Length: 334
Image (tube, rainbow, N blue to C red; front, side):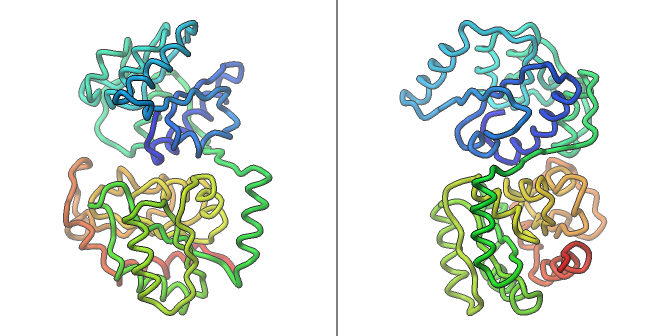
């Protein structure tokens, strides 16, 4: 599993289940730098091999460096959890007795060429359960589902200093995603941060990355409200982790921080319109807090893989504020 932060979070319960079932097994994770920065302290991974695609010659030097590092290694089993071509090429580079991948229908980008064994075909389901199909194939139970995405002592100290400087509990507000179709609008966020502060007594904390889009959205929100909003955009997934862990609530579209929030147990109001929350929503928790703009009308059964370019327009401010009030009533404690 190389890159996507949300998918990397979904892999963590797979890792914990394997280590729980096979405690003597040595687990190596091949991963790209961004996702590695989040999961690098995981207690059930014995070794990380970081694949750096940004090494010039359109990434081929990264493949050469990885091949050099793997040349004297042989593994008993490879789990090919990602179906992009670059992941398939890496699967090809790894010497292993078994290479387990998706069934032919789901083996995108010719993944089936690089594997020796495939999980059974299955109708679309939540992404987390889709990864658990690999465990089922191996006879390993995923229960109890554990992410074990903990903080270091230094991160706990940074977290304590930050939240100790606030005058009350905080709500993380995630602004942007890697796909514009999944983003909400800043005029809605302005009303949300005002409701959080004035009605619920929460300090809004803007979280996310340093992208120009997120920076522009944050500046528009800060300029559009008089409530005290904390701007914590910037680099660092580990900082994002302790921010989400320390907040009492998160408001987020379908993106990696939403799944991090779920993994650390922080209630999350999910804003969904472009993607199906039944497949990409917070796993086994906080479904009652999802604002479902994916369904065009209440109760509609939607194909799991369909997407809507206009779906986020059905995520109204009124529906978001209702879910925030519900979260405060059901999940947030003084």
